[in-house]
Image 1 (cartoon, rainbow, N blue to C red):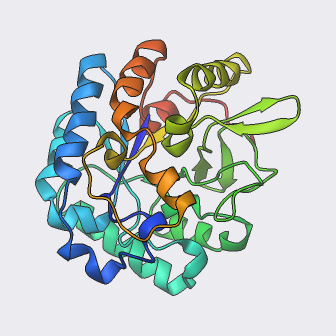
Image 2: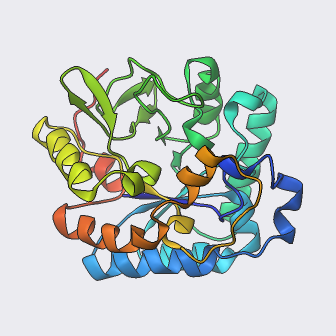
Image 3: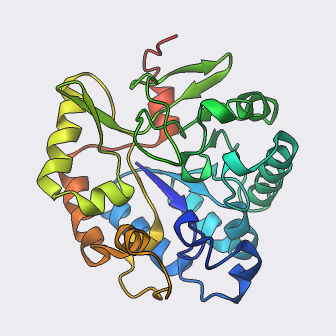
Length: 275
């Protein structure tokens, strides 16, 4: 179970209308929304991994401390939520180091994990792997093993946890194989848009094939009262706002139907890794 800790206005889907320079002018809702998820995880006794945006950590250090205090893993989501596909290697290195410095001020945990904004670790951005290793990152959870999405995906990536490079484990996003098709079942918009029974069936299929499902969610996805941004194209509006009012209830059901843990616990369990 993982959470990408970012505010409602940080998402790539809104970036053309709310640029990074305007974030401090927006109403923040990340503390209350992350608190809802923490309460749900506490209700079910689940330890999760929270990939925290460095920008959030700098402004809400007590939130990061609360995540750690409740027994969860703190990992990094970068600092500014820029996609790797729009960055040069040195820009990424600086952004990653800034995020690690922000987290170091809030928690004594060793930050071992990274998730790229919008899963933008692709064939074109594999140059980031060396920077991750040099920065002390032990595992990545950014690869989406699909071919259809315009912003992310490595079509032939291994569906199982595997060694991405020497010293760097990849925990790919959950994808089920059905009749030769790869169907995401890993959370986020897929979780909100699919019927719940479909998500459950696809996740069970992964488990029956001997694979864990890396599931993810954003705090804003459990916030139906968040501000609406005018001027969004229909497709972006649908993907961002649809079924926000049912996310918390669905998550509660999911936490009852499956056993979840954090990335650090999964790796500590010495799951066999494909090379």
